[in-house]
Each structure stands twice: as structure tokens, then as C-alpha cells.
Amino acid sequence: MGSQAVSKQVSIADFVTELRKFPTSAFERTDQIISFLESTPVAPDSLQPYLTWDRQHYTRNLIDKTPLYELIAICWEVGQVSSVHNHRDQNCWMAVPIGRLLVENYRVLHQSIDEGKCELKPTDTVEMNPTHPCAVDPLEPVHRVYNPRDFNQRAVSLHVYSRPFDSCMVYSPEQGTCGEIKLHYTTEYGKPRKSSH
Image (tube, rainbow, N blue to C red; front, side):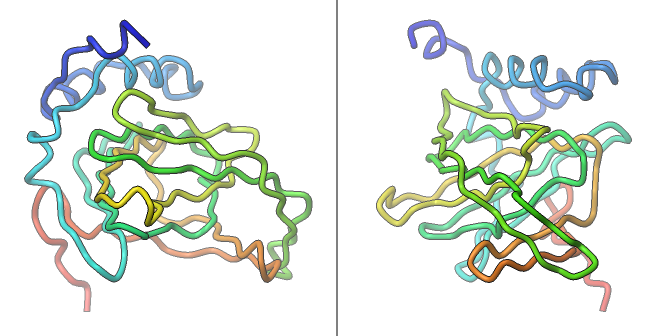
């Protein structure tokens, strides 16, 4: 634990500058980017322009996007939870500069996308916090993220997705169903997203 606590926080602007230096190959495996997240914690104050809160639903706020990756800040009120989802063969890394969150991982025992049916089994739950980022396992990428009521504080997670994507599969373990949904940003580069309707 010793050395991690000493890592100097960087601004989100410096974080993006460094992230853009990684070659394509770094985004095709998980080890280099997770090491970068562990050694480069983001200063919470520098995230202020990208943080929006909604009592009904967590918000997805685009910070940076290239052909290789997108970087999103997700803001979680107490008790908010994502659906169980996957990442369309992308890699995904998550860091939590503010608060803490739980990631619940699942194994897909069976799925038929055409029929919209699936069977999932929970495997493990890990806590993310400012000194403990995590990478989604490319072999078992189905998971959900949540901010438990008993943590009793807002949280912000930074997500690096490679490559950018605008849809994902969501699952209902309770009902044994699955289907594709479209993803949207709440804000883009610190500004409210222009509504398409």
C-alpha cells in the first residue's frame, strides 16, 4: 500500500496528454493502461468542468475521444447502479478519483442474442477507490457498477474505453433476458450535449 499512497495527483488535462501518448498496442491488452491509472491518480478538483449530477440516473460525461479510446467521467449519486452490461469486445479501465464504487462481475453461462435470453452467474465483487482502479476482464467482461447506499457519498469514476462505442449489451440476471441498447453522453467536453430531438 505504501508506494501507491505517495503517487502525485495530476490534473485531468495532464492525464489526457499522457494517455494520448500510448501506442495502439497499449489499448489491445489491459496491463499498460491499468499501470498508468495506478501511478497517475487524477486530482478531483480538475474534474469539476465535467461533473454533472442527476438524482434519477448516473451521468456520462465525455472528456476526450480519439479513434483509439474515449475517456468518460461517470457521476454516481448515492444508491445509483448501472445495468449489468458488457463492452462489445472493447477493453475498459476504470478509476475512481472521488468516493468509492463496487464492481460486480458475472460469468455468462448461456446467451442467445436472437432470442434475447441469457443465463448469468455472479463471480466476484471488487471495490474501486482512489488507490484501486481496475480493468474489465476481456474474457469475462460482463459486470455492473454501483454506489451502495451504505457508502453514503457521491462518487465519480473515470472510464477509458478502447475503442469508442455507442451501444452495448445489457442483461437482466433476474429475468434471464438480454438486449442491445444505445449509449448517450450527458455532456461532451464540459458542455451539455445538443439534443437530437
